[in-house]
Length: 209
Image (cartoon, rainbow, N blue to C red; front, side, top):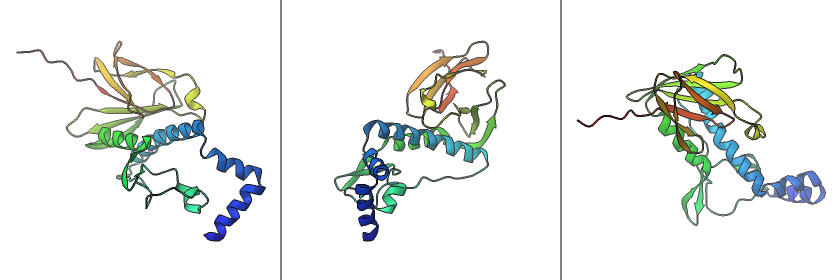
């Protein structure tokens, strides 16, 4: 490993491309984009797996093996150094990356799931939609528009009308933002982009007795 670190250091000095890649690791705008891609793909890959009848998934890895600054010249850091859900704040695992929030959100949304079925909507070939049956809970719809990984989020959302018998639904995106939407003529008017949305029937108000 010492030989590899020396080689990487030498390459960084001699090769503009490698030097540029290492410099861009700490680029703030690229890091924000990478974090958003990571959050989106946690949801997307999980839903595709479950719809293909995979019964259980796990996320690797939880956190670095030990506290301290990462050496980006190490092979494992280059391969998976950006993947951990958490990190050390001093000597304790107290830092939660955005992907940790998405992972926890996904686990909550899928709690009690007994079936995941992929659905299609006429006129929207790039739409990815999944209906989730949940034990003891209402149904869940997960959907997004399949787009370019890096630039798809910049494109305007697709206007979608999804059939819904409920009068309203609660939407939550992969980053945890939540808002209500009312059904119109038996369908939810949705603006769907690259970021996955969770849609579940809004709780109905009960009149006081």
